[in-house]
Image (cartoon, rainbow, N blue to C red; front, side, top):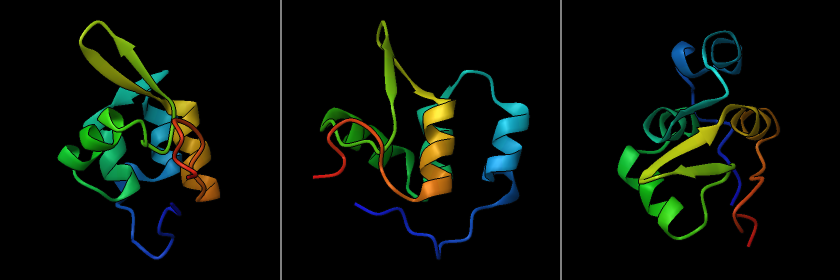
Length: 85
């Protein structure tokens, strides 16, 4: 799975904006939008263990690790959760 580099990322989901405004984790919805897919697709990928960056389960909630998301956005390559297969 290669993250599409040709897809335009809105300024709200650019790596510079994420770095400046997000804390240590972000919502699945925001991370999915930054990666170019829907909230529903994001949760589907988490359920399947194929979300392209590190996800923390906190109780019944899921949070995406900001540093991991930034590495994926900058490299275009998935990082965690068996996403490379």
